[in-house]
Image (cartoon, rainbow, N blue to C red):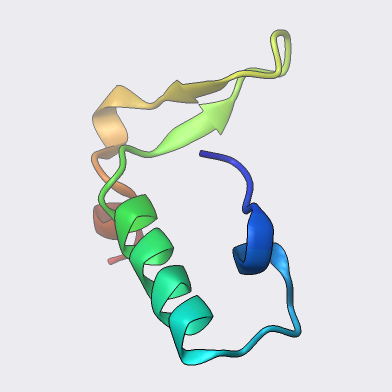
Amino acid sequence: ENGLTGDASSVDISTKDNLENLVKIGNNLLNKPVSRVNLETGEFEEVMEEGTNKNALI
């Protein structure tokens, strides 16, 4: 998941629903494995020894 779509991608829509949706998106990203972009393919690849994004930030 490397991009936001719809209202979530807008910086000027601060409705309660949109902000709650952004929290859900953020929490989902925190629980995903750490990934990096392969510069040769442009694809995101999981970094096995790094764990989740949440663990990498602690």
